Length: 87
Image (cartoon, rainbow, N blue to C red; front, top):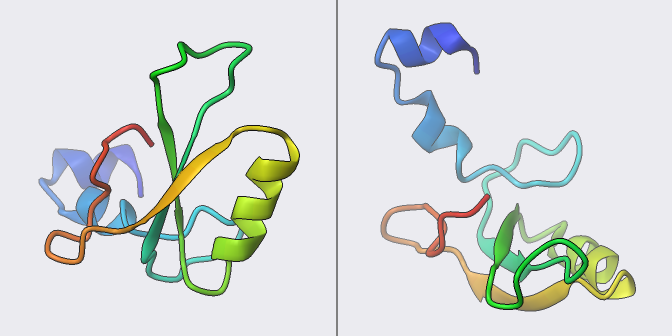
């Protein structure tokens, strides 16, 4: 995705929003992992990573090991977008 996609009115941003957050993975995401870094975020703030079925466990483990993971939710099947927009 580039700045030219936005200028042309392309819907690439909405398509890209549902891609797995694992490095080099371009699979469709089906889970959202909510996390927060207590050193820099307010306790109620939730950041979101998206995960495909293959990388959900890996990403959860990564966040849990660092004490950042809060919860995992299914991705909104209707719109294909995170329920909480803080990616």
